[in-house]
Image 1: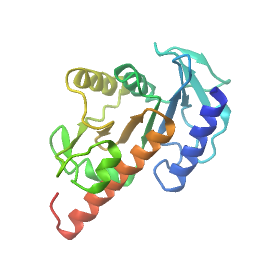
Image 2: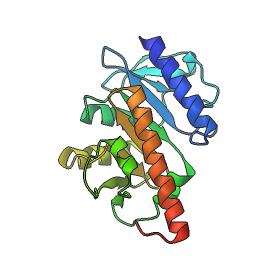
Image 3: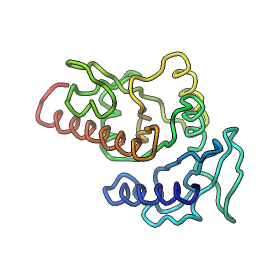
Length: 206
């Protein structure tokens, strides 16, 4: 099971690298194993050339339980750990650094980014007439555990309306009940980001 999960993550990372969402070593992906631990991409690895050795397995407590020599978990491991703790049903967590995600993070000064009421939003589980949905936005701290703490604090009191969050000037993080579902969520969110950027260029209000 562990090997299969890593192969799935490698395929996803390769795709995201090819579309420009995980350039160089940017971004990180993780997926749970049956015992509750999760595999996460190791720090400093090119996402277009991942191997099974380029992952670290982490216990729910954040302890490294399996790794290859000279590999350490992604610097954003604490965010993945927070998501799995907050949402036990989550089986995968993907974080990428697209240009559009960084651009739209400047479209609001608040802690929320209104999403366009497009048909595509159904792909995030929102089935409403003219939905009014906002994406949570967080400050990008150099000390990543601070971001994880703020995510935990806010979501513990106010769960997000969709399985995604945006870190300003950093990127988007999504999670889902399987790696396939998580990839679908990510592609939908990135579509909505591209729409927001394009709409602003032609003068369409959200």
